Every structure is written in structure tokens, then in C-alpha cells.
Image (cartoon, rainbow, N blue to C red; front, side, top):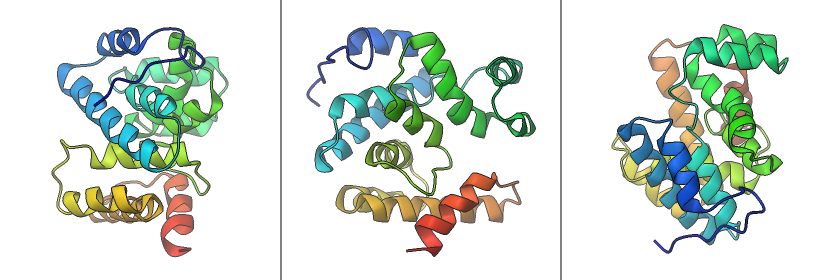
Amino acid sequence: MTEIVYTHHYFAGTRAQLLERVQAKLSDHRFAHVVRVEKAAIKLAQLNNVSPEKASIAALVHDYSKERSAAEFKQVIQAHQMDPDLLNWGNFIWHGVVGAQIVSDELGISDPEILNAIARHTVGAPEMTLLDQIVYVADFVEDGRDFPDAQIARSLAYADLQGAVSFETKHTLEYLLSSNTQIYPAAILTYNAWVAGR
């Protein structure tokens, strides 16, 4: 993979400096995942005429807060007067929605499109930019994923990004339903738009 040169428009440093900041906050396992997601995101960005730099940054920081404590997430929700309903959920939701705020606070990344892509990477949204779709799908199809149908998802991602968003959304909802897991309302809105509405 050709290293993406950062212009400093979105992060005030180099890719190597961002990698160092992210690695300091994550376990080796999680950091390796993030690097694989970046690789997939850059490839998807190039295929879909999206800024590879934005894709690189959004992918590298999408799980930046994944390993924070519940107490820290709750503190951020309250300090920034975010939707109080967030307090009823957990890390799966927090590390996206609240994680975007933490990325902004700690890394100085303020580009709305990058922050939205972080916020939406877990449950999507009815309306998603190409960058949103890229991070959402790259997280699902990165080379370390080995769930049933992973290869189908991967092939679809590089041929039809919107089709991959639909496939992932349906796959995720089916998994949550089969495991009797509480479903975040936004995930149902994503399903209605990307699966039922297609």
C-alpha cells in the first residue's frame, strides 16, 4: 500500500504521528484491526473517488476510544450534553457516537465528514456520505474478518459499495436478532433505508 501523505488539513501531523497516537490508546489486537481497516478504506476510497487521506484518517481513528471505560464515556456524554438516551447503551454504540467527540477533543480532528464517519461506523444512518459508507464497510470486510460470508461481503464491497452497505446492514441485524440483543433505534432506521427501501 502506498503511504498516504497527509496535507494537515484534517490532522495536524503525519500519518506516522497519528498511528503513534492511536496505538498508544489501543491493545495490539485492536491496533492491528485499525490498520487493516485503513488498508480496506483507502482501496474503497480510490475505487469511489473519495479522498484517500480522509479515508485513512477516519479509518485509523474509528476505534480510537473502543477500549475506554464506561465511566469515561458517560463523563463525555454528560460534559458535552449529548443525547441522554446514550447513557442507556454501551460500548458498541458509545465508541462510534461518543468516540467521534473524543477524537475531536483529543486529536484535534474537526472535519465534520470524518467525525460523522466515525459516529456512523457501527450502526450506519439512513443517509450516509460515501466516506461514511467506506468506513462502515471497511470495518466489516477488512482482511482479518472471517465470519460466514466474509468473502462474499469483501467481493461485494470492491464491486458495489452501496450493495455492500445493504449486505452488511442486513447481516448485522440478523445477527442481533438471532442473539436476542437489544437493537439501537438508529440501526433499524439504517435497515429500513438500506435494506427494506432498496
